[in-house]
Structures are given as structure tokens and as C-alpha cells.
Amino acid sequence: MTDLVIGTKNKSKLKEIKEIYADLPFNCLDLGAFQGVSEVVEDGSSFAENAAKKASGYALQVGKWVLAEDSGLVVPILNGGPGIHSARYAGEHGSDAANNSKLLHELSKYPAENRDAYYICVACLADPQGKVMVLTEGKCHGRIIPEYLGEGGFGYDPLFLVLEYHQTFGELSSRVKHAISHRSKALAKLRPSLWQLLSNS
Image (cartoon, rainbow, N blue to C red; front, side, top):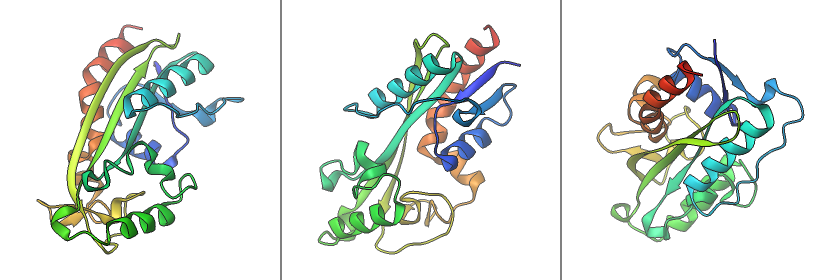
């Protein structure tokens, strides 16, 4: 069975990707299965650049196929912020509470109809030599609400209302979220190439 390394140390992302690809006949590993892996610096100017840097950088270190992604929240009224800085919006990487608090503060002067937002994910597959083979993108549109709803998901999920479902990502079941999320859309587009490339490797 071919190994597919998920190029993230974010346990929530890892769990989500493994659930979405649970039916594929590949051995999904994470970076914790390898010793001495250095974290790839995400200093690109776009989600695509960061996804490619991570996929290629980790593939070169572990010598296996690597799937990496970069994702975040885009709020047009905030000039596209948090954007590529979503995970460290408030300064401390991965502090959901601080990031959410800053987002609500930044949006406090705008009415609800100006709080439209979308999640975006760019997924990238690199071969064991670090060559980028495929890049795909997915988006999910919604609106930022002023209160936290739901205990599920991570990041900005409890504030991200999906209008057609009348629920936040924090409230939606994993089954529904995996059907409509930005990450699931990007991974769905990647699926045919993933199957073809890894099955022939």
C-alpha cells in the first residue's frame, strides 16, 4: 500500500483530511511518523505558495508523496483579512480564542450585511522528489456572526455561519461539513489525480 504523508502538524486538520479520504487505499501518515522533520516556514504571499512550499518541503525531507494544504478565512470588508495570516491573526500562532476575539473586534463597527466571508483552501500534492504535481482550490461562503455557536470544528468555525444551513461550522455535523467545506472541495478536486498518481507509483 502506497504511503501518503499529510503535511501538517495540526491534529484537527489531520483528522479532517483522514476522514475525507478514509475510503482511499493509501496508508495515510502524518509528520509525527518521521524523526527530525523541520517545520516548513509559511512565508509565501498566497495560499497556493504556502501549500506548495509545505508539500514540496516536507516531501524532500521524508522522501514520500506529501499532501499539504493552506487555508484560511477571508473577510472582504477587512481588505481580505485575516487571509494567509488566519492562524496567527492575533499574533500567537494557533490561538483560536485570541484570533476570534480580534476578528469580532475588527468587525464590531460593521453591520451584519457587511460581514460576509469565505473560507478558502488550496491543496497541493508533491511527489517524493519534492516536485509539485497538482494544486486545487476550494471555497465555502458564509457570514461572520457576533456570537459563538457550536462546539465542533476549530479556528473560526463557531463564528462562521453557513447561510443556507442556518448553522455555523461549529454546529454542523462532520458529515455535512465534509460535504460543503472549502477543504472538502479542494480535496475532492485533488482526488482523481491522487488516485492516478499514487496508484501508478
